[in-house]
Image 1: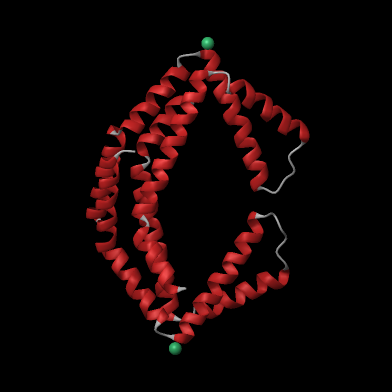
Image 2 (image 1 turned 90 degrees about the vertical axis):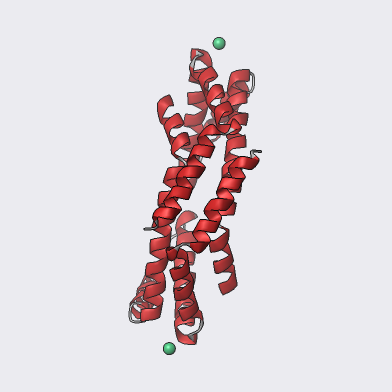
Length: 116
Length: 116
Ligand SMILES: [Ca+2]
Ligand SMILES: [Ca+2]
């Protein structure tokens, strides 16, 4: 175990916590959780997404009814500005995390690609 | 996009590259790639593992023959010290990466768990 390596990770964690993206994401979450309608809608959307992903991962069939229900929820979600703003913030954060991971994993990527 | 955040990731990348775990992993890789027998065995093992994982992810059946072939390769691999040392180094690196990810993702984990 390399203490030094963990120290750099803690520095990045602190930077993450203080970043504009994270603060924005937190605000957008708060806006949704403070609004019972938006909050219920967001939970419903997240639940159906997770259910369908789970089924897909397990190779199980997704019924036409489930697809239609997911579509119906997605349509409603798109009408709610608080929820769409939260989803945009999540998307942004997800892209940032992908970028950070690409940077951190570069030494390993290089090592593995040098093998093949 | 937060430049500062990326700078911290680059610092962590450099620390990763200079870490004992990574240097050890590189050495163990070199020992395998410099040995044609060990190298061939390692490739064979990695290929069958990837094939079986792929099949599992797609929900396809894994035949008894495939299981036996994987087992046979795994048995041979366990006899080769260079390959087993490389696999131990990979396991170690994988654990370190899991730890680092846990640290970096803590702000997001906290945010998501505060919601539910
Ligand atoms: Ca409302
Ligand atoms: Ca040999």
